[in-house]
Image (cartoon, rainbow, N blue to C red; front, side, top):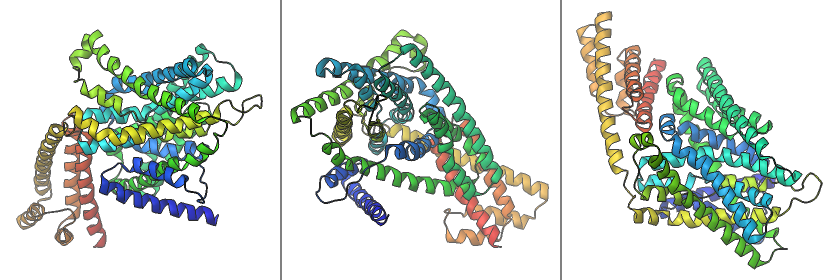
Length: 529
């Protein structure tokens, strides 16, 4: 137990050190953490660190997926549902088939083993590409599609993975039964995810206590994930659905105090989880290398190069027809969503790096099949999965800034951000006008004195910052209930602008956070009196 705690503290120290270096070098921490993990794993004498696949699948993966879904804009997800679906379902299936065919034809691997490896390495991990893309100010739609694909592709891949493991273990596979099962899983998880989101949101509104609400938010991904996973599904789609339901409905039902505390809590939790996951991914290099004694170096190198190349090329082969064919064949799609420049699908094709889900799926392969015999080619599958992660995450990820600048996409989203800034300024002005109108209404209804009205207006006009030390003193002289009423009026106006599609989710959340901070300040001042 003591050794485990010491290792955990050491890993946290490494994460902090790597994060500092990553900021200085402007490298995504995920890439540096994996590389550091590989180097540490190959140092003789250091303790061996192994990851329990069940722990990652059941404990680590649900909050990661749920947090990403909550931060995702449901409106933008819905608008981009076609390209997201074509990538998260179509590209995953195509990549799985491509890897299986290449393994069977070129390496004489059984089809079932090829399908299993294909299902494992088919889903990209968007964490590293998104961090780079945001820093480079890529067009916003590329970011939305990458983020949406990252939410949904794990569900497709893990369902295929379960089918492939069952086929290898039993030696049987029925396409008709698999199709029916797949459809039932998708439908069932969608319904379950909506139910979990609805229930947890009502419970949180009922308890009205930030600490209990945050506890319920931690339980939400597990409640969404575990039952479908236990019943034979993936759990991923249900968790994504619950998170998106929270994203779309939470801003109306979750209190300001809960949002402020929850944002900090979840941001810190995800920072630790993702950092630990990427570091431990690299640390698995020792276990991977140790299990390959009966394979020749040439065989391993050839297989790794082949599978990595197929995974990368298959995405490029899929992305261009998936982008342009629907627009060429369906006039309604072409009118509603004109074709993007060729650089956009190239960028989406290039950002298909692999990560933790692929590694966890490979580690979770059973040691034996139903007959009791060792699971065929398990060590080779684990090695090839690790190789694909290194090639795509470290190789492609490190070169991504250069590629995006070559494509001319770096800073291409600057105009969108300028439009968002103007929309934000206009929303502030409208919210302030709404507050003034509401105050005039209150003053008339309550017959407030002229002196009070002038003092109240002066205090709001002189408010320079949310954390201004003079703010609390000014509010102490005023009617806090009126101030909270005006903040509520501003919040309602902001939400109306958002519902009218005049604000993006990013702008709404920024304004919402400012209102939350103001409300917390007023409430704190009122409680101290």
